[in-house]
Length: 178
Image (cartoon, rainbow, N blue to C red; front, side, top):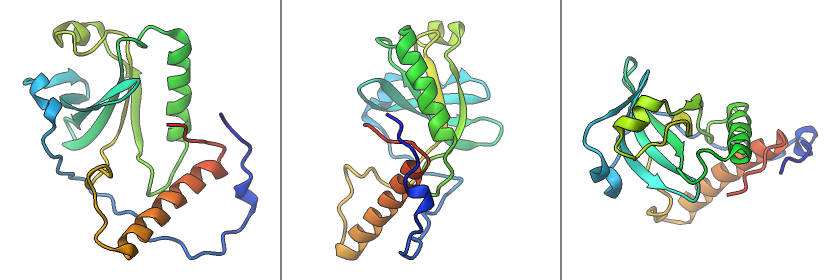
């Protein structure tokens, strides 16, 4: 659901929030799903190292840009939706929307494509040939699901950063619906 950029014309009287630092080398904790795969799957110029999490429509893998040695996250659409033309269109629109955003609280999009047939076949069923994928910046820091704020100022700082990122999206007509 896209809405006109209502906030774009309104000046923000608040001071700018502290930017979220970006780190080229992000340590990633081991995932309980990591035992699903032992050998990296090649998706040039990236390799998929291990599944990190599964959501309602996709699985997110820990990956790496091989030549740059850059950690990435790769969101791969699940088998149920891999061949659904309407869903593929919605996913492509999501990729374009996120790629159009430039904010320190929003991950960068590196690439978009489809899982090639040979990779799907060699993955032992973990990856579906033709399934859309999105390669993006691997967010640093702990999962918010496991993070406990040490105090009110830390929680307030995090909420201000999250709200600033959402305001950036809304001002550009992008509404996050998850």
